[in-house]
Image (cartoon, rainbow, N blue to C red):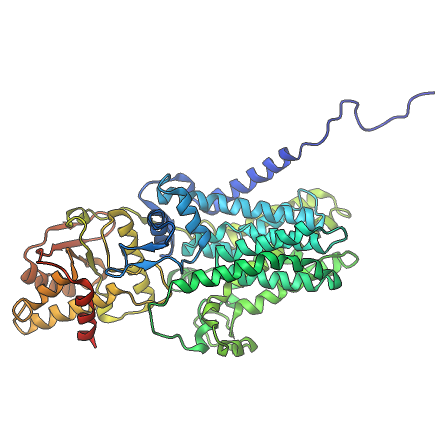
Length: 579
């Protein structure tokens, strides 16, 4: 009798999962290089961004190592110093501590920009495979849709590159699904608690997003939701510790945002979900999160294609529910149009809603759940349709990154070189930067640009600055001192007494301990800058240095040293004068 024929060769070897993992990671890395191009060029003196939030991230990486473990930075917000306890991301703070000068800040942030989406995408791909039994290559779409989504593009354009490192949300979904499935273990619940904690410490908003994910996924499992309760052993102490850390930072600004505006700051619009625009990128802080049409179409097919299967309803509910949350208190076609009031507007009057500004970040829920559903639909269709047609669909999902989400065309390159004028500033003495913004109060956006730019420069020149580099308020000591000095100089110049009542103005500067005053000409109208410089020259003498490198035109004046500075008393007296 002949031996039975088998399709398995005698030299068959066990599968090597690491080879598949390496291939998937390589694919995501190539996408990440394109998505954030030209970040992968690693050009010194160049920051790849569109808005200003990459500047404080750079400052944090450069300056945080000296703040361990008390989290207090003494060379900013002079003369008080400032706590880093209200930093946007404790994960980024921890990375800065671990780096401790090993890599320059711009290199570390570039690596984070490139590697963060790769790790996040891989986590979403593994979540699709392990939690929802989606085989490769279809699971690849889950990672692509999550880590390279419209909301991820918005984070990159804003400069919140630490948001791109978020494998915790997919890890949370996987852990909850495993914990509530037959055979779920205690370790799965504890891993869910750990994933929630890492989400919270990545950003407070990710903590809110993780909480919503956990609640819906847990409750959708019915009685088995009790299996997730051990996660509280991790969640409760971590949450209390976070609140304690955050409360340590205090409050700098007494200005309150009107409650009805909380959910209107940083909201998605219907047009912004459809596509991006130059106007939104230029004037509206890139507050848009275009939906990938391919993944969206696949998600909408899920009730039909997956009707006889399990596990798709909760992700679909989360994806659909995230859209009105992202739209906030008003449903608007674009940021310039009037909108219809949403029922969510009622939430604006609840205490503590200041933390719910930028509700567009709920789109992270949509991108994750949409990607999971898209991969599940592709896997189901692969049982009925030849795979070559579905591979075309996957190629279309890649095209969405360029055609719909608009990356990398929306990115810009900013000069990251510190102007040479700072090299002439007296050593170890505070620098007072004058941007002119504090005089005309031209708006919060420009004020934040000047604050973050001043902190970025401080990260390099290392001299004390009056600028507040971490905090939720717009006002900082630098703005108050600049307003006082500018008003005093201009009024004294008009009265013919540039010295300010017998040198009282110079004496006040010396009491504050100011070593140099820097005029940022490019932030002012030409006539205003000349008028201010003439008054400073009458008070302090000719400029010590001028420079046009670093992308700015700067003029530095040195303050003659006084006797013994009394910065705290001088600052309080200055504030009294302003009142």
